[in-house]
Each structure stands twice: as structure tokens, then as C-alpha cells.
Image (cartoon, rainbow, N blue to C red; front, side):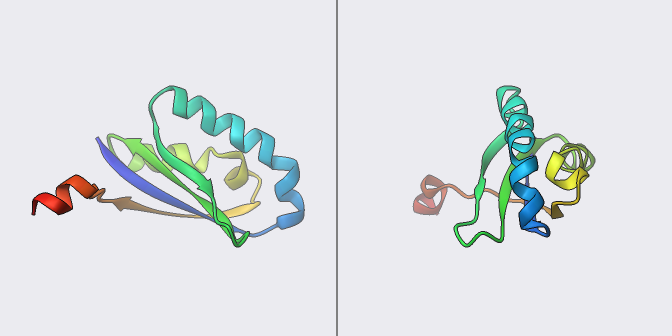
Length: 93
């Protein structure tokens, strides 16, 4: 398993409010399946971040592209594999 950071850049702030409940429900469903490591909005209102847990890049892209915010073009998706380095790993190096 690997981590994939999906940056969701705000494109349409007006439509965002309409789509937000479906976006949250979608992510909560994936979170219940153990497919979400972290998620949340940027405090400056420019979008948000979702860190997916997936076996492959293709699986992560599939999940990210199915997000209602992406499907309805409210936010632009940028996704990259992310190497998580915990505090404990840094202290031990």
C-alpha cells in the first residue's frame, strides 16, 4: 500500500457549497473502507487535500476522479504519490 496526495484546487467557489455534502459523504464512505489517511480544506479557501491509501497509482486516481468535486468540475485535481515520514522515523535517523 502507498499514500497518494490529491490536491483539490478550487475552481468554482459558488458551486462548491452545493457539491460539498456529496464530496464529504463520498470521502466518509472511503474512510470507512480504510482508503483515506487524511483529508481537509486549506484554511485560505483555495481547495483542500485528500491523502488516499491505495495499492497502485491507478487505484488512487480512480478514487480521486470519482470525487463529486472533481466530477462536477468544482475543483481541479492534482495527484502525486506521497512518502509519509513520521516523527518517530525522523527521530530514529
